[in-house]
Length: 510
Image (cartoon, rainbow, N blue to C red; front, side):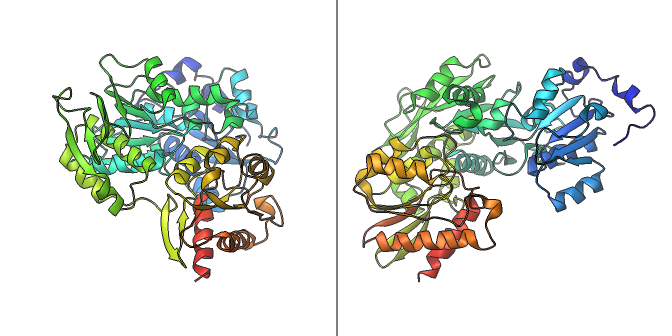
């Protein structure tokens, strides 16, 4: 797009110092030139917000998205679709961005971010932008931030549900699907926003100050993106930085405890643990089948609050060990914000987990079927497998640089059969050969390994074949578990699509 007369002169008025000083919705954002990388739900929310503030926005993206492209035209944002060669991102020098906002998932060394860094142009993620804009309404929400390799979506939903039960106006946002900027622009405002943070968002977090924070667990994941386990750990640990009231951690996971120990927090912030054992003072745990709060009881050294029983959780299908941990973590976060134990108990007992998260599909011929398509990494699959005794396991997809050998070795004794799907089957098959050679297995070979080349209906056909193979391997008393330990985008749109295809294929067996 050609420069209009006078525009470049106006652009030069924006110095890096002036950009970095923007810290309020009520600051002057007009005329700021912003390049936004990505046209997913997050990228569009960024563009929509900044256009509302009077900034000049250009969105740079790859895959076509006709609906959002039309919306960009409606709101008045510029757009540029990059070629398949990522080096060709348009004439950014002509646009002259003062600021670059990067959607989650784009690699740290993406050509646009590298281009900006070389020129000293600030590069933010959507969470940093949201923190700066959190005061649109007079009701400025406290942020309760949650991350972890596994369980963060369920815990985020549970925490928000508990806060609402406690009489607060609260909502989940962030990586859970609703962009933080959409929540912040709600005209009524919120008392609290429960922010699910992926490691990608944490890597570009900026300096925020959560009211309370939690890292639920830590295991290898996204190592290809972060350049190794240390980079991944460093990103996850950022969730605790500058926490004001409570750092909630998993006392059975030494890495989350180390994150809290090394965190630079606001003076007076407390460390509050959770776990499946009897809790110490300042902890949440389980005693004789009862979930216990010793974290916020005034007499926590000698007394405790009772929340709910494990039997009550079992009646609602959320008594698997990893789900109990999620409940305890959410309870700790909600208690930090002042929700009473009785209100938390009511919230737990009317909570309904989302689909595709250890979702029970019923029984056919004495064989149970469970959809845990949300298990997109080895840590999540490990939690699902541990809850069962005899399993026919459907596994595979995009492994994201993780070796699942330890996962296979840990659960070889409970496997009655394995069905291997996905583009990266070689790593799964090698792990099975090394650690579970005696277990029968079936490899589902697709017509193509690339999702964009799969003919219409082929993804469903792959899952139909996988379910039929699993049924042939299963005996009465077994559970067929879809817990792929891998991302889904090689053969499916996303993990819900994978789960839907699985459930449809199970129904076809009836």
